[in-house]
Length: 457
Image 1 (spheres, one colour):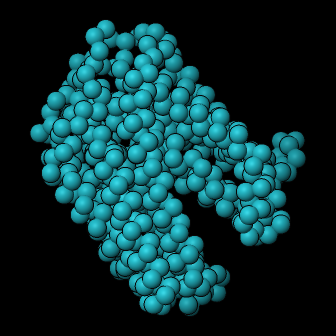
Image 2: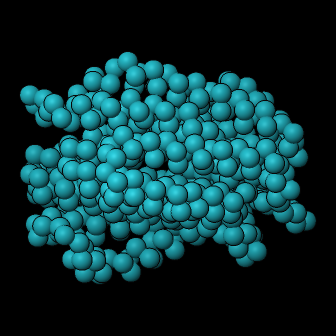
Image 3: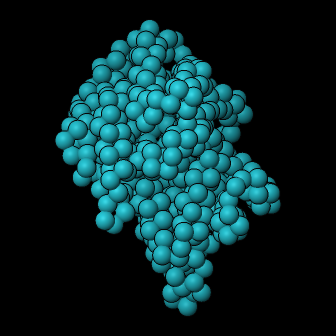
């Protein structure tokens, strides 16, 4: 594929927002799919709701590692795009698809083990039965889900964030319509309940992926060979930097799973429900901030690829200011209208205890928003530069040597309650933000060669 002259990205608000808003929409579609699944099966009973929501979480647990790995495709694609090497960038799109194919093989191999694994947990018999069917269908599309992420990161690295947005919107529409057909039994299809929700998700994921992949191949055929020369050394290089990126997400996610299921759950159902409500509210604030961080990382990667490393600190600073500004607005809303935000999570007629704890937790959580913005922006910038191993070890050390044991001791053993639980999240994010800031300003990322030398020909 011929090279395209590189156009220097400007560290402007317009450029940043132009890349960020489609990412916000893309991530929002995933939230809508999860909510639609939960809402549409809720009328089938508590067992159906529990099986669907827990099944979706378990699916995410399985896919989070390969998902984190293919995020590195954006780093390679953006740097190679910055060099004007579009053929090289496209090869990494194919390497991401190789990870997706491996993921699908693992998912297929895991399906026969689902009943035995679920049997080791304290699920009610009806929940376990329903969740087995749900997971079986969802794992049939594990590779397609990772394939969408791989191609989205490839196109994102080129600055084309609107195309993945369109793909995700289409997947969302197909998923919701599929729920209507398969869960409740319409258009001549029998009502399949929880299994129907999983079937709809699998169908939507595969259709979206196949369309996305077809477009990827078609665009390549217009400019060069369908499969540009495979280079094992490049695939190994992608995994060398991508696996730490995936482990970043994996270990941090499981640290928070422990925090929720062991530390906070020990405070009782009301405190647990309040924290989950706060996290659900927080996910709405997180999506724009993460999208901004991802957009900033694209500009960082393109600048490094063009050998304009001196532009990077200015881009990171601009990205942080915008993300922090957004989180600052969210903090004001948290502090001024906490009851209004918690109200949708209360039972009809109200729940005084849940409202009181949720209000307190939500107002305290305003303290972590600025640190959350800093962590997102800095971690994404370091990932774009290829500094993935350091962020992995930083997260591992702070999460599992400080956050997990510290929160367990103070909350569970010393009985310091929900206030201490929230403050531990604040402490975790503030420590991580400080460590990542020191790493970034030390400039180690300037000496990392992510893509290496471009081979002749």
